Length: 534
Ligand code: GLC
Image (cartoon, rainbow, N blue to C red; front, side, top):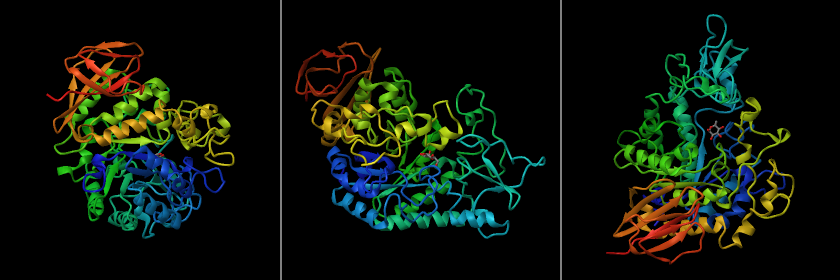
């Protein structure tokens, strides 16, 4: 299971590494590829199957690598192409797949394509980006807003037009209606595919195509004061246009020309819109990221509804996936608390669908409050003080109790929390009941169990803080019983048959316990139970 073959990305578990923060090997306080290589045995020891690296390409780092100035190079901060080749080879030698971050929606404003494009109105690359004349009053062409604050239009003195940037002004959007742009990005994809990378996580894939007429976006009637200013308008015309699916199908043909590659889409959209990203007849992304758990109210009933709605909405043959954290969202341990973080781990690793873990969640890393002088994230700098900052979930991996957590020998680019002296890999590895041990046990259990990897999902009726479901395959049934609250619960569902056996508790202290029809759960406890064969 989970070893190569067509199904590897369905059966496997993904692990996201934010390269700046995993391991510094050259003493500049910033993580790098050689550092990741050094820590590969740890990644392997978790039992995961694939690593996704956030961008490692040459970049002015205005948005920490999501502003690319060369799609086929490695930024010197992260190392050299030789370092990359060594990492890829070592990953493969260890049975790990390697996924890169493709950022096709925008480049850096310092990318040679944009430098050319902005140089004159008749430059051959002019139409590679989105240029518009000023409005009649000389102002911005329409009301579209940047996700990072302010108008999405930047006036360019040299040529007297505005260019569109969905994110920073340093991140001009490419014009995906232009076939030359498509061809150039597909060439970059092939460059990495030829090297043997196993696929791409495609950044903001739902942004690629914009309304052909650039109509004004409607106001958001549900805007809540205090939320980021870009939420004042909906993105009806600036994102999620029907033509985007043709582009994604094209991209998919690029990856499908190679064996066993995967296309993952970053998509923040409501369920019914998200499903379209599987594409007609599943010709779109194999894994349109499902971020429902990132923002849900953490209660048994909401999660039950989310899972059921998602399962029901999946197109025929489409494979589900689940995510608990990433480099843009507050750490799960802070969102729901450290006790529930263990329950969340059990949820993530027992649901039907490919799980993606975010580095550090397996050691319970929490969101760090960043002092104003330490803020690095451009989003927080542009829209300060309302909690949009992403630095707090990007802090260095906590390997040990030393001052820089074993991440670096010098002061890291972002601080570590003081409690890293307890919450670190070295400590938690030595503790057989730690969250890290729990993650390892859950991963091992999943991988050993066809019911958990590929079995059907059946919700089981429950009330209050209880979430219960059955996973079933090849005549084996696992019941997952999660207590999403702090109080003990005596579970008496008929699913807990006489003779059922606890395979794992989130407390890691009751494996092998035989149940006699009742299951006494402690507060914040989850268990995986195997039903007896009948
Ligand atoms: C995606 C990335 C985020 C980045 C943005 C712009 O949402 O995950 O980190 O800032 O795209 O590229």
